[in-house]
Length: 133
Image 1 (cartoon, rainbow, N blue to C red):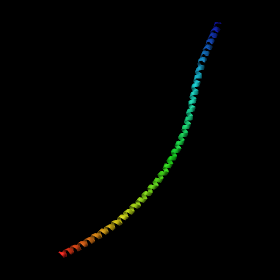
Image 2 (cartoon, rainbow, N blue to C red; image 1 turned 90 degrees about the vertical axis):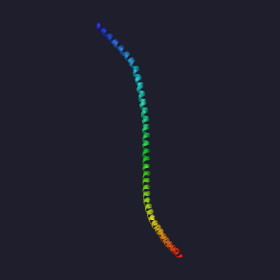
Image 3 (tube, one colour; image 1 turned 120 degrees about the horizontal axis):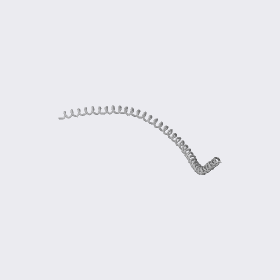
Image 4 (spheres, helix red, strand yellow; image 1 turned 90 degrees about the horizontal axis):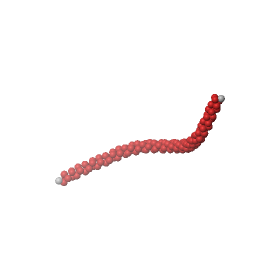
């Protein structure tokens, strides 16, 4: 009988310990559940914010791509304009060179003709002055 009483007391103490343990664990479990619910809510809100951010980022990338395409088109237009300007610059330079050559030749002829006439006139005057003296 002693053994059965000892076993009964041990079972009673174990049951009491189990009841105390469960009594202590229930508030801990509820607190952990609330904290887990808070973490889950935070994660859900973060996901919603990230989804919105991802959508805005995609829109930003689309807009940036559109701007790059537009800038590329304008750059091609500028390159074409620069090519046209270079073509006309070459033509104008050749025309200016030709005009310069023609004008230079004409001016040389005029000055040469004037100098020649001037020398003839001077000689004639010198000859006339010599005759008068």
